[in-house]
Image 1 (cartoon, one colour):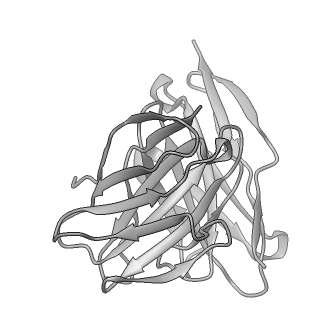
Image 2 (cartoon, each protein chain N blue to C red):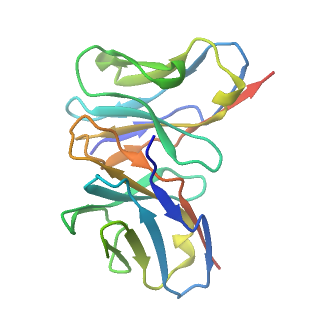
Length: 113
Length: 114
């Protein structure tokens, strides 16, 4: 069965600094990988997804993620965070793209001035 | 961007009562989902629905749960007799038939069972 782990429950970062959120998955084949963001009172918004092809994926809001098969990882990065990036971030893995995903526990990002 | 709409945003109920959570998916979408997130825990898949029937469900989705698309626009989740452990944020999601299209999530209904 697939699983996804986000090792960091909480990250604090200064505005303008870089951000990296870790995600590790366990699955026998190449999974479909997603990063979602949830702001307070909002739904889950898709940042980016990886199905196949180029392992460096560009998303919305200046985010990118890199799929590394050898490390079973799909880490999310942003070179320079903005205060509006404060939110909870979820990594998700699916055996197909149709919507039955398994989500990680989430990483809460706090942005300080 | 189109939105999935969920109502109410917050529902409080007594244990043993029935609740219906409502969702209006995006109009041209054909695949519908319910997920839930218990406070402090992961977002969990409950059920997927296509062509007026359940296509897949998790072990969480027992006989107390049911889903329905009563008309062309609404998609509902019913919990027949709520338990304390049903307290969670419930997310509705929908997608089109396009394989590369993303899953759109609603903003959730926070269910509190007292």
